[in-house]
Length: 328
Image (spheres, rainbow, N blue to C red):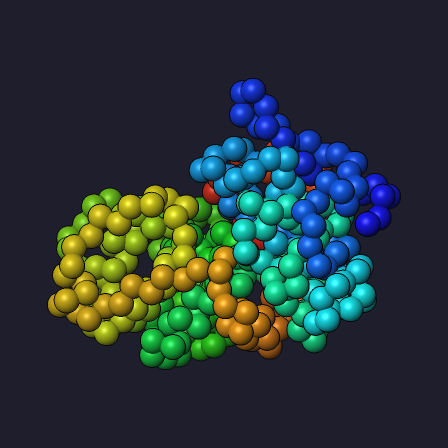
């Protein structure tokens, strides 16, 4: 095990909760695992913001390096599936929650958690996509597998956020007619540049509505939950489906059975944390095929590890546009 030092954003338990600071650590401070990766980039997600603020019990053990995803180069491997020099990406599996994650210059993880980087993607581009982009692709895949075909009207909620912005781009590229729901009207031009054909004001869906509304959407990607998801379900057309992957607004679902039993609407749960390797590998390959570097750069900004504690408030409050790449 190497004894040289490297930089990491470390969360430690304190008497009043937790403290997060940039530190110099060694591999001895990381969990023992078969593959050591030189982390080149991570990304900043809503869950990471909660983790840094000590909210929702995201961090399960201390001390801990947060960061739920990363991309980089294999430094050393006892797993025959990987060799030094391999470019890899990791998302999910409890990394950055119960296992030290990507907000460091080095990580040690299990080989079965890694995906080899698809041809055509750099490590930076992979993290510009990150967990949010992978989740967006899995949502799109869920709608496709259910039978929601291109050409139909689809809605994306939380559209200016990480998952939402990539979902808008992917759905538009595949030929769907995409409407983007957002509470930030200042992002209208940004969302239309991603392929949204219409902007829906968040307030339209924020208040309690009827159990069934007019049939508006063939499908939807929901990142927010709560009353908005209930109203989206109520406005989904017969035989339509909603892929739900987030809880940025609320964790409850104040709806009735009417959309499900009178309109045959499906609610498709999408998880990216424990998604099987074959499906996540397929999703990364499709992302590399569907998104070009210009698509990725359009929704991306880059920051260093030292900027993350301050950004946590912004991402929780919904003030972060698109994707944030973290340069380690």
